[in-house]
Amino acid sequence: MPRVLLIEDDPAVREGVELGLRRRGHDVRTAATGEAGLAALAEFRPDLLLLDLMLPGMNGVQVCRRVRDTSQLPIIMLTARGDDFDVVIGLEAGADDYIVKPARTEVIEARIRAVLRRIEEPGGGRPAVEFHGELAVDRAGLTVAKSGERVALAPSELKLLLHLSAAPEQVFSRQQLLEHVWEHSYHGDARLVDACVRRLRNKIEDVPGSPRYIQTLRGFGYRFGPL
Image (cartoon, rainbow, N blue to C red; front, side, top):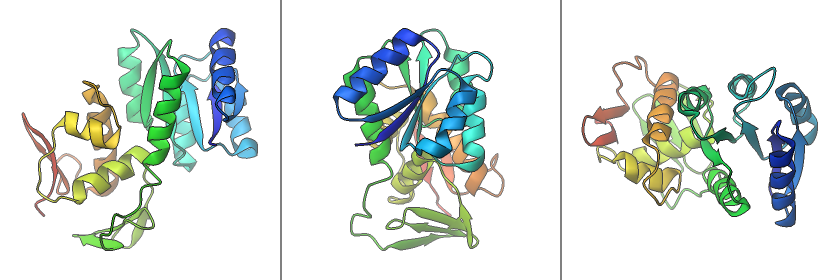
């Protein structure tokens, strides 16, 4: 079962989430502050980070940025209702998904599985390595290189690129991408898609403001190319 590091300052929420995930077999480590959580990362080596957005001292966004400086560890933010502005900042900082508190353990576990599934999907019979312009997309190895240089992508960024590049020039609506990439079967939050696209463009485009690979069709959605 996945090893989950939970950083949450509210004792009731922390204990409730920890107990719920442990009952389902997860190996869970908890921390009450961002500083303590960062210290636990190297020792515990989690498969996923559950990160409260509003923490005392170093807040969740700062923790997310620190993790992304050195790691593509899957990150799910825990947010309170009304934290819309902070949610956007958190997603821009590199979080892969978010969950609004309070949330049932079943919901949290489903999101954990969905995020981890993004980096476990096989190539699906396509060529192991595809070349698109200066991009080399290795679907078997789940890596991406640009002009021969490895590009470090968070799980949601990699899954989004794999999905779009599997059907060049096909337009996908934000809702379609939410369903396929984030496995949100309901009317989900388009901010997840838009924030992930911006982060992806910053990593793979020569000029993010004039994208060549991830193109916007206003009123419809996004497509890969044409190159």
